[in-house]
Length: 353
Image (tube, helix red, strand yellow):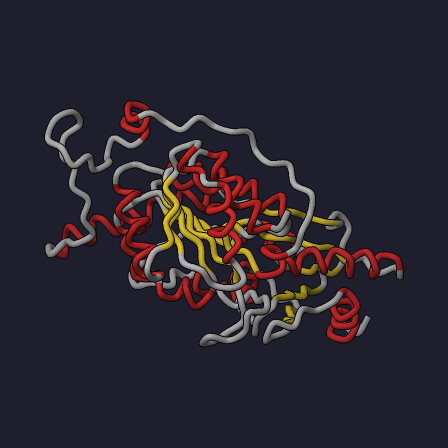
């Protein structure tokens, strides 16, 4: 199935309580597949096409505040419209899953794939000092797997999680093993998992109040310090990455998502010609695998960062290094996807191999 379809199936099987979205290419199959599955008749999952992206993210905000597992999905311009709501969700420390199937920009751009939302996802996007946990799938299998992982992390840390995919992974078809069905939590189990949740009634757990407004600057600073301490814990505990032929590599390629798959072929081509090249694929773009980049920076003679953008992840690569080695960028724009030969040529040209 398509990557977008895998997300929809995984959401139903995870026991998601609510999906609120709005159509936009290249992620519309998520909503369309959920409508075909009609999970409201089997699991009780709410599936609603909102009147806009702004409405959809605020529905997630409201649903998440009750302790329910809620999600939304969109593509780049739609995610831009959701940024205010995402900032509110982060400030309110609410668990939520946001899927971004990236397309080219800026502006309305193109419906073709891109990776140019890296800054928007990893640097906050909305206002204020906050972070989302950002997962970057590179296969249809990971599109399915990261739904459950995303919600598990979201509830563990009371923090929004973004699955930062791209148009290629969303639209391509691969075999996928879907996760088993998980029973949806009862109200009592939700109360145990989320004692902070708003109930809307005075009895029982009490009418908890969630707000992101604090007019006392001292209390606002205290809340921000608490958030930063949480982010430090996430950075210590939740970094994920994949290495490919890095044991003896002299040059390293760093890439995420669909580009990492392309770069694997380029690394194999380089190895076939006697060049010791390896690949590091960040799976969590935030928290970023800075320590691993730093370690490999002491081993290699240079790094090539390959992205479908003008050079966004390369900034985090450079910040991770404490030794000066050549770091170059190779990117394509406008929905044009590089091929392995281009990566191999870029390696040889930039490092005169």
